[in-house]
Length: 248
Image (cartoon, rainbow, N blue to C red; front, side, top):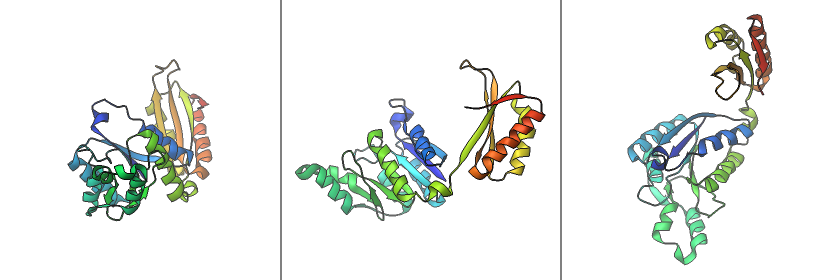
Protein backbone atom coordinates (compact mmCIF):
# COMPACT_ATOMS: atom_id res chain seq x y z
CA UNK A 1 0.00 0.00 0.00
CA UNK A 2 1.00 3.60 -0.59
CA UNK A 3 0.68 6.21 2.14
CA UNK A 4 1.59 9.86 2.64
CA UNK A 5 2.54 12.17 5.48
CA UNK A 6 2.17 15.91 5.04
CA UNK A 7 4.19 17.50 7.84
CA UNK A 8 4.14 21.06 9.15
CA UNK A 9 2.34 23.33 11.57
CA UNK A 10 1.87 25.81 8.73
CA UNK A 11 -0.69 23.47 7.15
CA UNK A 12 -2.61 22.89 10.38
CA UNK A 13 -2.84 26.57 11.33
CA UNK A 14 -3.79 27.65 7.82
CA UNK A 15 -0.70 29.62 6.80
CA UNK A 16 -0.23 27.27 3.84
CA UNK A 17 -2.72 25.25 1.82
CA UNK A 18 -1.65 21.68 1.18
CA UNK A 19 -1.05 20.75 -2.46
CA UNK A 20 0.87 17.53 -1.90
CA UNK A 21 -2.10 15.23 -1.37
CA UNK A 22 -3.69 15.92 -4.75
CA UNK A 23 -0.27 15.68 -6.39
CA UNK A 24 0.62 12.27 -4.97
CA UNK A 25 -2.84 10.91 -5.81
CA UNK A 26 -2.34 12.05 -9.40
CA UNK A 27 1.25 10.84 -9.66
CA UNK A 28 0.20 7.38 -8.53
CA UNK A 29 -2.90 7.33 -10.73
CA UNK A 30 -0.81 8.11 -13.84
CA UNK A 31 1.03 4.87 -13.12
CA UNK A 32 -2.07 2.83 -12.43
CA UNK A 33 -1.52 2.96 -8.66
CA UNK A 34 -3.52 4.44 -5.79
CA UNK A 35 -3.01 6.04 -2.42
CA UNK A 36 -4.35 3.98 0.51
CA UNK A 37 -3.97 6.52 3.32
CA UNK A 38 -2.70 9.99 4.22
CA UNK A 39 -2.00 11.78 7.50
CA UNK A 40 -1.43 15.44 8.33
CA UNK A 41 1.07 15.93 11.14
CA UNK A 42 2.30 19.05 12.89
CA UNK A 43 5.88 19.72 13.92
CA UNK A 44 5.45 17.59 17.04
CA UNK A 45 8.39 15.20 17.52
CA UNK A 46 6.53 12.69 19.68
CA UNK A 47 3.64 12.37 17.25
CA UNK A 48 6.05 12.07 14.35
CA UNK A 49 7.99 9.29 16.07
CA UNK A 50 4.82 7.36 16.91
CA UNK A 51 3.49 7.66 13.35
CA UNK A 52 6.80 6.73 11.70
CA UNK A 53 7.42 3.81 14.05
CA UNK A 54 4.06 2.37 13.09
CA UNK A 55 4.40 2.89 9.34
CA UNK A 56 8.04 1.74 9.15
CA UNK A 57 6.91 -1.57 10.63
CA UNK A 58 3.95 -1.87 8.24
CA UNK A 59 5.85 -2.44 5.00
CA UNK A 60 3.84 0.34 3.31
CA UNK A 61 5.48 2.58 0.73
CA UNK A 62 5.28 6.07 2.22
CA UNK A 63 6.06 9.56 0.95
CA UNK A 64 6.69 12.19 3.63
CA UNK A 65 6.55 15.85 2.65
CA UNK A 66 8.23 18.54 4.78
CA UNK A 67 10.25 19.03 7.92
CA UNK A 68 13.65 17.86 6.63
CA UNK A 69 15.43 21.21 6.83
CA UNK A 70 17.86 22.33 9.53
CA UNK A 71 15.82 24.98 11.38
CA UNK A 72 14.69 24.30 14.97
CA UNK A 73 11.13 23.56 13.87
CA UNK A 74 12.21 20.83 11.44
CA UNK A 75 12.07 17.45 13.16
CA UNK A 76 11.38 14.85 10.47
CA UNK A 77 14.97 13.65 9.95
CA UNK A 78 15.57 13.22 13.68
CA UNK A 79 12.21 11.53 14.22
CA UNK A 80 12.78 9.11 11.35
CA UNK A 81 16.08 8.09 12.93
CA UNK A 82 14.45 7.67 16.35
CA UNK A 83 11.62 5.61 14.89
CA UNK A 84 14.12 3.33 13.14
CA UNK A 85 16.33 3.09 16.23
CA UNK A 86 19.41 4.47 14.49
CA UNK A 87 21.53 7.62 14.68
CA UNK A 88 21.80 10.56 12.32
CA UNK A 89 24.96 10.67 10.24
CA UNK A 90 26.18 13.09 7.58
CA UNK A 91 25.58 11.12 4.42
CA UNK A 92 28.64 11.27 2.12
CA UNK A 93 26.61 11.70 -1.06
CA UNK A 94 24.46 14.36 0.58
CA UNK A 95 27.60 16.14 1.76
CA UNK A 96 28.99 16.05 -1.76
CA UNK A 97 25.78 17.53 -3.18
CA UNK A 98 25.58 20.28 -0.55
CA UNK A 99 29.24 21.21 -0.98
CA UNK A 100 28.74 21.19 -4.74
CA UNK A 101 25.84 23.59 -4.30
CA UNK A 102 27.41 26.00 -1.79
CA UNK A 103 31.16 25.58 -2.20
CA UNK A 104 33.02 27.47 0.55
CA UNK A 105 29.65 28.59 1.93
CA UNK A 106 28.73 25.03 2.94
CA UNK A 107 28.38 25.94 6.61
CA UNK A 108 27.82 23.36 9.38
CA UNK A 109 24.18 24.47 9.46
CA UNK A 110 23.76 23.72 5.77
CA UNK A 111 25.54 20.39 6.11
CA UNK A 112 23.02 19.43 8.78
CA UNK A 113 20.50 19.09 5.97
CA UNK A 114 22.54 16.08 4.81
CA UNK A 115 22.41 14.31 8.17
CA UNK A 116 20.16 11.32 7.56
CA UNK A 117 19.36 8.16 9.53
CA UNK A 118 22.04 5.49 9.26
CA UNK A 119 21.28 3.19 6.35
CA UNK A 120 19.47 5.86 4.33
CA UNK A 121 20.09 6.60 0.67
CA UNK A 122 19.64 9.98 -0.99
CA UNK A 123 16.88 11.26 -3.26
CA UNK A 124 18.38 13.73 -5.76
CA UNK A 125 16.98 17.25 -5.70
CA UNK A 126 16.95 18.70 -9.24
CA UNK A 127 16.27 22.25 -8.04
CA UNK A 128 18.96 23.11 -5.48
CA UNK A 129 20.89 19.82 -5.00
CA UNK A 130 19.96 19.48 -1.30
CA UNK A 131 18.73 15.89 -1.30
CA UNK A 132 15.95 14.10 0.42
CA UNK A 133 16.39 10.56 1.67
CA UNK A 134 14.97 7.07 1.55
CA UNK A 135 14.80 4.85 4.63
CA UNK A 136 13.41 1.41 3.92
CA UNK A 137 10.24 2.03 1.91
CA UNK A 138 9.83 5.55 3.29
CA UNK A 139 10.82 8.51 1.13
CA UNK A 140 11.36 11.93 2.68
CA UNK A 141 11.24 15.06 0.52
CA UNK A 142 11.06 18.82 1.21
CA UNK A 143 7.84 20.73 1.71
CA UNK A 144 8.38 22.89 -1.39
CA UNK A 145 6.31 21.44 -4.26
CA UNK A 146 8.82 22.63 -6.89
CA UNK A 147 11.42 20.32 -5.31
CA UNK A 148 9.28 17.60 -3.76
CA UNK A 149 7.21 16.63 -6.76
CA UNK A 150 9.99 15.78 -9.23
CA UNK A 151 11.75 13.92 -6.40
CA UNK A 152 8.66 11.77 -5.82
CA UNK A 153 8.34 11.13 -9.56
CA UNK A 154 11.98 10.02 -9.60
CA UNK A 155 11.42 7.60 -6.72
CA UNK A 156 8.36 6.09 -8.39
CA UNK A 157 10.08 5.65 -11.74
CA UNK A 158 13.37 4.29 -10.39
CA UNK A 159 12.19 2.08 -7.50
CA UNK A 160 8.65 1.01 -8.25
CA UNK A 161 8.31 0.58 -11.99
CA UNK A 162 7.67 -3.12 -11.41
CA UNK A 163 4.46 -2.20 -9.57
CA UNK A 164 2.99 -0.25 -12.48
CA UNK A 165 1.54 -3.42 -13.98
CA UNK A 166 1.40 -5.70 -10.94
CA UNK A 167 -0.66 -3.29 -8.83
CA UNK A 168 -2.48 -1.49 -11.63
CA UNK A 169 -6.12 -0.63 -10.97
CA UNK A 170 -8.99 0.93 -12.88
CA UNK A 171 -12.45 2.28 -12.17
CA UNK A 172 -15.88 2.47 -13.79
CA UNK A 173 -18.97 4.15 -12.40
CA UNK A 174 -22.52 5.20 -13.23
CA UNK A 175 -24.75 8.04 -12.04
CA UNK A 176 -28.00 6.69 -10.62
CA UNK A 177 -31.00 9.06 -10.41
CA UNK A 178 -34.06 9.01 -8.14
CA UNK A 179 -32.44 6.51 -5.79
CA UNK A 180 -31.10 6.71 -2.26
CA UNK A 181 -27.92 4.93 -1.22
CA UNK A 182 -29.86 2.48 0.94
CA UNK A 183 -31.86 1.36 -2.10
CA UNK A 184 -28.65 0.48 -3.92
CA UNK A 185 -27.12 -1.64 -1.15
CA UNK A 186 -28.47 -4.98 -2.53
CA UNK A 187 -26.83 -4.31 -5.91
CA UNK A 188 -23.55 -3.32 -4.24
CA UNK A 189 -23.51 -6.39 -2.03
CA UNK A 190 -24.32 -8.75 -4.90
CA UNK A 191 -21.56 -7.42 -7.15
CA UNK A 192 -19.05 -7.30 -4.30
CA UNK A 193 -19.74 -10.96 -3.51
CA UNK A 194 -19.20 -12.01 -7.13
CA UNK A 195 -15.96 -10.12 -7.82
CA UNK A 196 -13.35 -10.41 -5.08
CA UNK A 197 -10.82 -8.26 -6.96
CA UNK A 198 -12.90 -5.08 -6.93
CA UNK A 199 -14.31 -2.69 -4.37
CA UNK A 200 -17.84 -1.40 -4.88
CA UNK A 201 -18.36 2.23 -3.86
CA UNK A 202 -21.12 4.83 -3.71
CA UNK A 203 -20.83 8.61 -3.60
CA UNK A 204 -24.05 10.62 -3.15
CA UNK A 205 -24.42 14.14 -4.52
CA UNK A 206 -27.02 16.68 -3.44
CA UNK A 207 -26.74 18.51 -6.76
CA UNK A 208 -25.25 21.64 -5.19
CA UNK A 209 -22.97 22.13 -8.20
CA UNK A 210 -25.90 22.55 -10.56
CA UNK A 211 -26.19 18.88 -11.45
CA UNK A 212 -29.19 16.73 -10.64
CA UNK A 213 -29.26 14.87 -7.37
CA UNK A 214 -27.75 11.43 -7.89
CA UNK A 215 -25.59 8.64 -6.49
CA UNK A 216 -22.34 7.78 -8.22
CA UNK A 217 -22.13 4.01 -8.04
CA UNK A 218 -19.05 2.18 -9.23
CA UNK A 219 -16.30 -0.38 -8.90
CA UNK A 220 -12.53 -0.01 -8.72
CA UNK A 221 -9.72 -2.51 -8.51
CA UNK A 222 -8.34 -5.31 -10.70
CA UNK A 223 -8.65 -4.14 -14.35
CA UNK A 224 -9.38 -7.71 -15.40
CA UNK A 225 -12.56 -7.69 -13.31
CA UNK A 226 -13.67 -4.06 -13.40
CA UNK A 227 -15.49 -4.05 -16.76
CA UNK A 228 -17.42 -7.23 -16.02
CA UNK A 229 -18.24 -6.10 -12.49
CA UNK A 230 -19.39 -2.69 -13.76
CA UNK A 231 -21.71 -4.37 -16.26
CA UNK A 232 -23.13 -6.56 -13.49
CA UNK A 233 -23.75 -3.39 -11.46
CA UNK A 234 -25.58 -1.79 -14.38
CA UNK A 235 -27.77 -4.86 -14.78
CA UNK A 236 -28.63 -4.88 -11.08
CA UNK A 237 -29.56 -1.18 -11.09
CA UNK A 238 -31.57 -1.60 -14.27
CA UNK A 239 -33.43 -4.57 -12.78
CA UNK A 240 -34.23 -2.45 -9.70
CA UNK A 241 -35.95 0.09 -12.00
CA UNK A 242 -33.61 3.06 -11.52
CA UNK A 243 -32.47 5.35 -14.31
CA UNK A 244 -28.73 5.80 -14.75
CA UNK A 245 -26.03 6.95 -17.12
CA UNK A 246 -22.32 6.24 -17.33
CA UNK A 247 -20.19 8.70 -15.39
CA UNK A 248 -17.79 10.77 -17.46
